[in-house]
Image 1 (cartoon, helix red, strand yellow):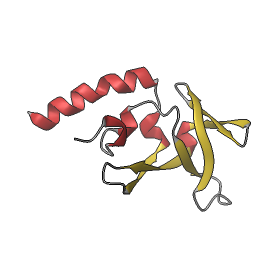
Image 2 (cartoon, helix red, strand yellow; image 1 turned 180 degrees about the horizontal axis):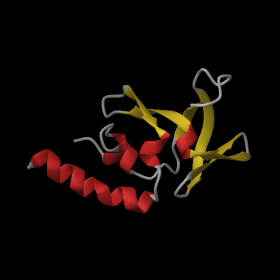
Image 3 (cartoon, one colour; image 1 turned 45 degrees about the vertical axis):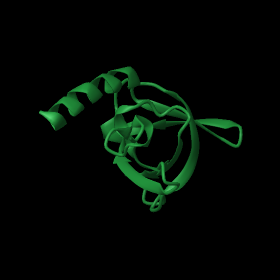
Image 4 (cartoon, helix red, strand yellow; image 1 turned 135 degrees about the vertical axis):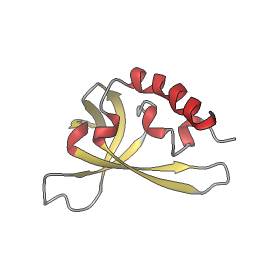
Length: 107
């Protein structure tokens, strides 16, 4: 059975602290490709505080498209891409939505 952290369907409902992310700015044409932005060290309702090479940087969630590689039990990795608007909100509030999503899936 997949853990929730490695489940692509539920990943955006969890907190992102400790996750290595890649991002692409939706409005800046110079960011045409995804770039590694580092590991998430803190998350608020509208921002992600990332740390890369020891220097912190804050990213506004709704301005970016994100990617993450999720390791699977068999050793492979799955690429998950999601819009920053999907993760706007407090992590503890998003976690509560998992129960609703699972309830809909099985009923």
